[in-house]
Length: 304
Image (cartoon, rainbow, N blue to C red; front, side, top):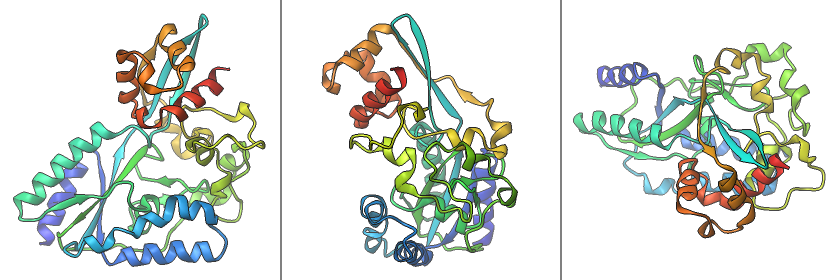
């Protein structure tokens, strides 16, 4: 068994993934920690019910699972260009949003290896507190900005988790840790437009984070300055300034270009069904079709 676990990890490492395999029993630890943070007031009640409560509602269906396999997929920023009124607007999609193609390849590789050894897997992405899982599994550490940093990737990665009936050979479960360099660095705190990053801990005021605000379909709060927006979705202010990411900033996915006509169609049409098919396909490629209203609103703010 330990031999197969090592082979699995080495195979994925050779494909530039980072991997940890930890016991399914730690689901309880994750839930306990989140509830503790909520009780202490470090997690907003609204945020808990909107984003976090769902994480553990499905665990009873996993009676055969013995392990959680957490994997970091390297992923750069994506630049998306919009032409509008004779001007070119280069916008950014952060690393965590575009990865379905990479996830598909990873899922196939992992499933094939597990099945060949008599094991199975269930994808669990977006069903767990992935940053917390990655940090407590020993694969990464928190930055002061509450983002998970992975060796060799910085914060430019996407996390995905799988449940499996593969037994755990070595478990590195630990207390959540912050990067040592963050102790003497306040770059992200000073660059955060909303002031959600705190000096005394790596738990941010999540409900005050620009990412939380512009991922929501609700109108922007009055306290949000339109000049703060810097990405089609999410926010890159704390990651771009971070010294840990310096060597990864040049790795950029060229993304897609939207013509003046396409950009105008997006801004003028409130419903996804109203725009031309070619434009729809580009938006689907950006994985924004499901969030078209948010995508359209954020684009409008960035352009105007």
